[in-house]
Image (cartoon, rainbow over all chains, first blue to last red; front, side, top):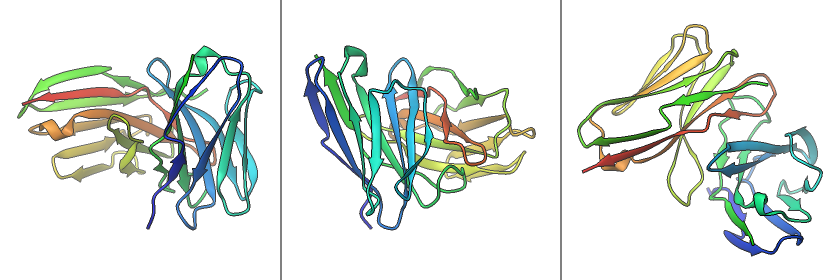
Length: 115
Length: 110
């Protein structure tokens, strides 16, 4: 079966702009989580969606937002981009939310560079 | 806030050597997962350990979950260049999101 698909793979934006990233989970998976990965901080949790509802939110400013559609596809948006937002943004899908026994499958990520 | 500390942060070894990577926390987790991430790719799940004291083997990789479910280790026997990558541990607790360590970057030199 197809894996988790994230688009685009690479993105270069200017400070102050906004960006939308997309994630299509594995067919049948209804839970989607987003993470930001930087060399200094590692993977930091952004938010988690299950059946179109945000279940958990990480400690990020309100410039970071997300949503999930009825087909389980998810988008995250970052407004008023800052240089520090440059990172690899990873999406993970799983059958169930939150529990460590539900294997999480990651996409290849979107590499965002803010200049 | 639950934190996972991984050590060492970086490891460079010769092919054929053995190594151990550690993942420690002051918090108890219901399960702990190990991932490997290669450059330009997302993390790939290697194993999930659930029971305190549990040991799982995956070819040359041995994973152990501490008795108190606060720590875990990954031991690689006879490392090969193909083992090169970023090894991440992640803890799960109830319905909260996975908590990741910062990773151990392993380089195996032929």
